[in-house]
Length: 59
Image 1 (spheres, helix red, strand yellow):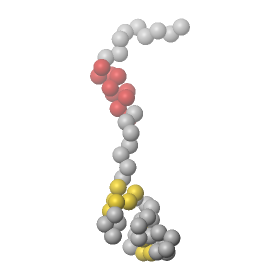
Image 2 (cartoon, rainbow, N blue to C red):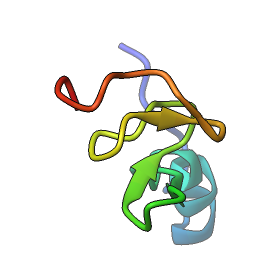
Image 3 (cartoon, rainbow, N blue to C red):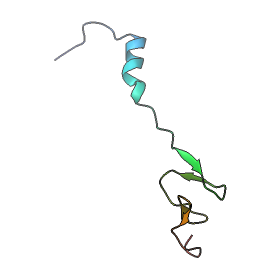
Image 4 (cartoon, rainbow, N blue to C red):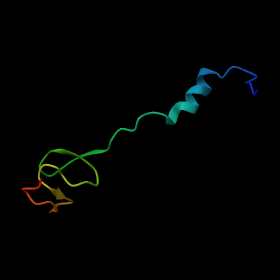
């Protein structure tokens, strides 16, 4: 069985794990002022890139 020859240092372990963090969602604010995920229509007013894409009764 393969066994490491030397102990992995804290620095090397941290460098290996540097990409394992949870990604922070990219939040942008709609024209109506509500926070929204980017590249998605607003759940409150139904607009996307300044135009109405979802009708007001569906939103």
